[in-house]
Amino acid sequence: MKERAPWADARVYAEERGIPIIADESARCIEGLIREHGIRRILEIGTAVGYSAIRLASVSAKMRVVTLERNAKMIEKARDFIRSSPCGDRVTLIEADALCWLPAQRETFDMLFIDAAKSRYKAFFDRFTPHLRAGGVVVVDNVLFRGLDETALNRRQKPLVKKIERFNRYFLDHEGFDAEILEIGDGLGIAVKKGDKDGTFRENIG
Image (tube, rainbow, N blue to C red; front, side, top):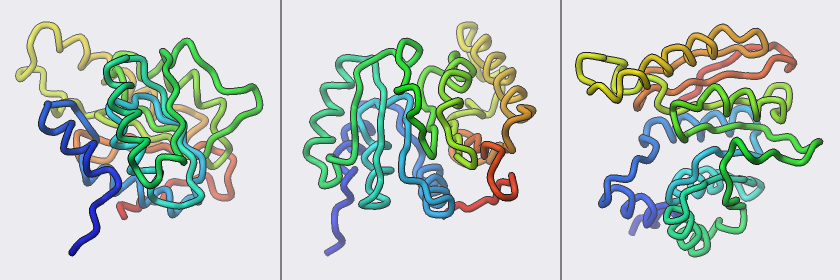
């Protein structure tokens, strides 16, 4: 019998209730990046029910994931799933608005994973990338939101598409990072912070 994945319960709960979680192919891509870049400390912006935090923590026994969430109902469920997971002791869940929280001054991470309010992607990026080590990786989910097809969006969604488009240009043109956007899932932005040996991103989809 195939062993049940540590994140399986959180995934089922989210899918049954229509709670957005990262696409499986995108998660596998990130898992590949973790192995390739020797990632050990991850800062995640947007916990939801804890699916991605548990999944990333399960990659290695040496992994440590700090994840931020401000929605009290999500936090309650995430805590339950994290506690019941065999790798839950590798996840630290912090209840906070990400733009009102900062790591300790000298605390650094190997990866920054942004999967929260799309309208605030740039703010999250600017706030937390100073705490990313040189050679560290930024991953941003949903950067091709619904393919950026404005004809399929309602009046409230169109301004969000514009914000994502502006963020994508900012992300790809940032002088401090080598970045690209992969057309997997709903679009996955990946950038490596310059200052490592070769300053380049090597694709690895796991």
